[in-house]
Length: 222
Length: 222
Image 1: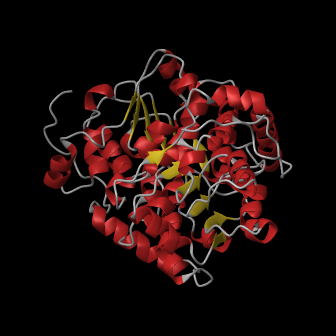
Image 2 (image 1 turned 180 degrees about the horizontal axis):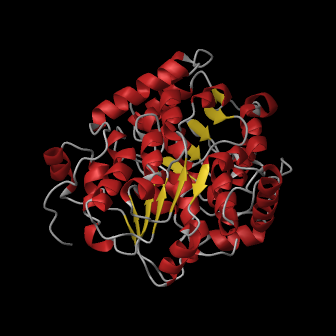
């Protein structure tokens, strides 16, 4: 690449200080968002998720289990891996925020996945979740893309799979997303298995929301 | 990892066929979204962006230059690189959809970036854009995270930098995002340089929207 000799002529008046951008962003979010229905220790998680999507009204759709933040944070502090359904989520996790150099695992491109998906008549995202089996115990799980991955995870848990420490379940979209997240929110009541979770009711979700939640859970400091 | 012996017990009734999920999703989006104000060849781009965020009303904020789709697609077909401000965007580009094994470039972790950002008093995201200089000519640019990166790009172009074939400018957030996208939409009128662009007015944006736009531009087939 050629030599860069200097910055371009400043033609627009905009905030160029990264720390100030964060500070002003979070202040605006706190001014505009109603977060009182959330557990007190989930406030910063909500703020960071709203930051990731630009929508203060996301707060109204957020459901956070009372022990989600404490359990996820404790798990990460002791080295739990993060398991996720999408490479974009893995890519969005700020490694410097992880308290224990935690592994971030996405098995969507594992060579066994296409055959399992075909054999089982399901998506590759769902089949890849079965490959988490021996890392699931005490892990922090984040589903940020595929409703089928979240449904598949809940079915594994109902069958007696090892329990993760926490589930960030925020798949996005028009087919199964809202339903899979309702199933997550109802899972303890329906199956007697109480895994701390975070979700966003409705169609909204996605890898940016999943990654921002993980980044907020990784450490308390904003 | 241990052996996976079979799928979990099917306890939820959900669509497990990946192709059917796409088909039903796109049909729902087309049923619920008002896309008539967009160039005809941008319809599939809008559908895929709505798919990525779960919000049909995104359409109302979409602004697409009449030559955006044709120019971006032609550039990619002849091997133009994709330049982006965020690793999440790069990670979200489906390589199998790229027509020419196109390079996907994010220079945010280039070793020169921290020093340039300090020296210039700007963000690392913005400084990294200056390192695109000798690949900018005819490239497809996607800003999916930082408003400062989009402002910086426009300042470079106004200073006479080589012109990209197309700009997907969809930074997200509360400080500068809306303003940077208004500056993109007004750039031809204000600076006499007409680069085809796509943007989302307001605070919404982000890496998932940028990646979905790129995936739609990469080839016409859904």
